[in-house]
Image 1: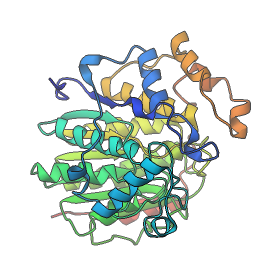
Image 2: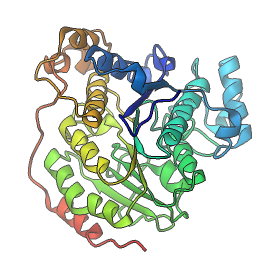
Image 3: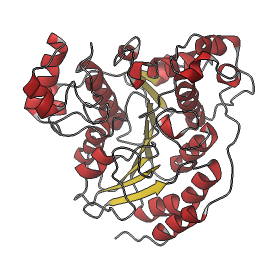
Image 4: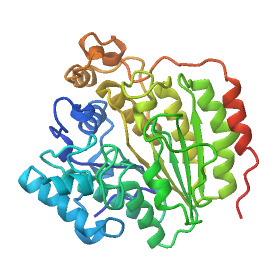
Length: 375
């Protein structure tokens, strides 16, 4: 019997992420979902009665969005651990940061299966956290930006198939949620909102880019701080969501907008991530939170475990219990910052607040979206 997310939030997890790596020199060499799950267990926040293991999506489910020939190429790449030149050129498997690795099909298929299951679980309402999801760059027929499949698209399609027709996709990853935006550009049932670093790869998501009319993009400058995120949420994002009157919200919570992340230059603390979660939780009867980017294992695990705490109204202690500290001290991070990590990466979940001035460009960005109306 599946847990009921209307009674308490449901956590969707899988062991496939444990020990899975894109390769020793890749940004996704680090443990993320397994570390988040271990930290939640160590905090005493993991209840088997409110958790479910993600299934691997079936091919017929994946072809709801993805090209069958591309899926076949991914399966063959996993089987042989290699790709011919034409596959690399056509499908970008083994190219542009999308390596062939041991679980190159089964891991993204599990992320997709977990996200689709999460969408089904909240069909009648409730809250689900699925940190293994969030691969928002995946394209219908090619890999892109470390993403082989697009589980947010598949989850949103699941909601549409269930009859929902007013859905918000909110993306706070440092990188523009281009794959999701483009998948629903012409579909007025899905409003996509992306807050991301201006000029960061993939270079899309300009404030003027509304795709087919249902995209709202808020590109922010380097150093984007907690006060500025709070301002944009209160002045632009939350009013847009309220105006759209969603039946469901999918929040992509990529942790690479945190100050310590090596692949972006934003300056957020995890406090404001948790504020976003609390704010959107009240705006629709269905909420799914997925993961996404994040390339510092300490900051990702602490941020996503804290999201689970926010969804359950758990109290985050000032000092972690020994079991949780042990999880964090057991992580490996081969970048320079990992050779001498600060003490709070081991002993706390909550970052120090990173407040600051709200710069004029942030106020101007909010003005663009201040009076949005949706019919």
